[in-house]
Image (cartoon, rainbow, N blue to C red):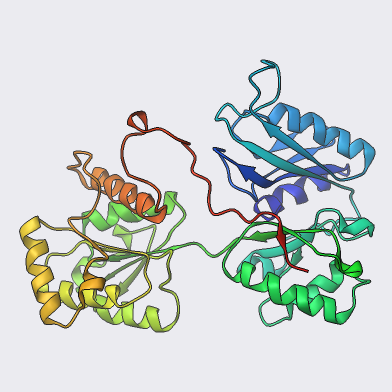
Length: 382
């Protein structure tokens, strides 16, 4: 629901009920992950998509039925070879969709709460264990105990049960999981919770201000990255060259060290070195490889790569850290222009992020096209 919050607000602003259809579980090859939602107005207007067209018509019909009944429901969709008219996924997987009808006045419309905008995490129940509960996600607010949010969902639960539930749910939210958590036998907090995590945009650090960084920053914006271009040379760091990025005039290794200490360089962060100057490159790569950045890549020839490895070893960088360096950067797609190079780089970044990916043409492979992320299904937490 969080990914379509504004659409929910717009639908309810029409003065009629709507329904939110959310993918809560997936199995096999599916186009979109758990947490994907679409909004259906009572008039039949639709915002968003769950699968790109495979099951939308059936979900629309079921959503209108849920609106008419005024009760939430969960339905399953999967591939069917026996019925050509069945609503199924052509990619062969299956998914469960939770349909939550909402009435104007019973849902809290308006802009997302500040906590949701800041962290965009929320938790809500799918059935409430038979108890009436709020339909909207309860925001997970930094600095506020999770048990307080869970009390809103399970008002009859004992404090000890809420604390135990919070101690098990909180690590999942901190890890960025989205999915269903099945409660245990505690009377006050039985039922199912749906965790919705919307972490901040991943960060892209481009070391060196040049045409390649400009192309990478444009593509990074399309892919949802928050981009920083850093270079110590004022003559090359005109912000107008990089409208999709924050431009910083600073030695790259100094910025990376500061970002690392601030906790902003994490496993989703991407660092790309686009310069070819040893006095910039070696300190910057040493800082990047010493951080938690998930991807560190460097442009340059194979000869340049070998020279850098030798200089990094001389600077004290250990072999396990050097093994993390992607250089020469990118996948072999025959790229020449800065824009083609940017496509090559992000192809490698995407493949590296999904460790099961080979980076090879899909036409020459077997198995699911849409690899499922690590599932968060049927966890007993209470």
